[in-house]
Image (cartoon, rainbow, N blue to C red; front, side, top):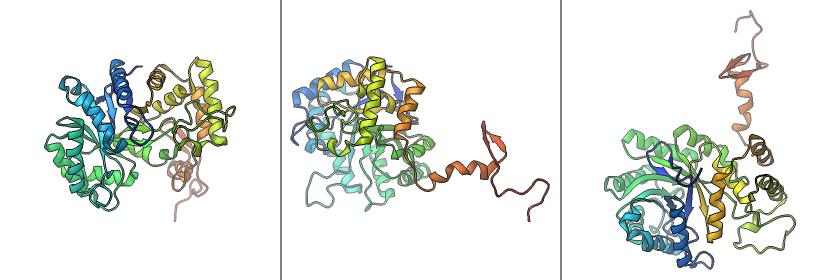
Length: 360
């Protein structure tokens, strides 16, 4: 597989690359990230390799990320129209303004207009709700987004960092009103972040939302940069990584190194291959602050993990679910104990009536 082996995002006809180029690191405005020149080089190389899916947000690097993309791509229609440009709303750039962010109609329309201006384009291919706004009714949000779609300013809708039950509410509203629904789900997903498998992943599979994981290397913890051997000796490029370095993380890195060695590969590629192979995952976001990172990460698409290797990684990171999923194993016996359904046999539950006896 390679970047030009395109896949449709969820239940839509939108074709995207299996790895999406994340642009959160474009710009050095926050003290870290890529220079304008290197950001442009990374975009060019990603496109040269066949990539067509670029993801940003209105407030990444204080809005500079969108401007970098716009200056490089937006002013060239021949290049822009061949790409799937995705950006997000919800984040406020205006301290003190209560309507500067969130998911209300006033904020959404203003955010969209400003993103279009910075991206130097007439339309956004995929517009993400960045995170759930508890102060705005979902009906207002979906109605405002439908207006943007009908106006031709937005092509498709996606949702990020929002509870599963709220996403279902949004898409049911859209279905019964004849509005555009969310086709993509952007969530944190990695070997060290699998809690999404309790509600969000099953929801996406059931309702046909294409999963687009972010932070698949857990802020670089799974990149291979941090190991038991150099614990405490490697500087954390960003503050996030240090908070995740613990015994569980090192155990996973040990296994990634062993599998990488067997494939003559790298721990980062193994971790990315694991995420990309998870049920429901369409396109994984890879954030490349340096060109070398992009080159290395893209090669993960060539890596095929064996069932045994996947099982080893799964067993190290198997999440523990809470109620009601923790009761799920007993449900088949309650529902159809003593029979086989869809190839799965369930033993009788202890509550069954003896054969030949009638229920009360």
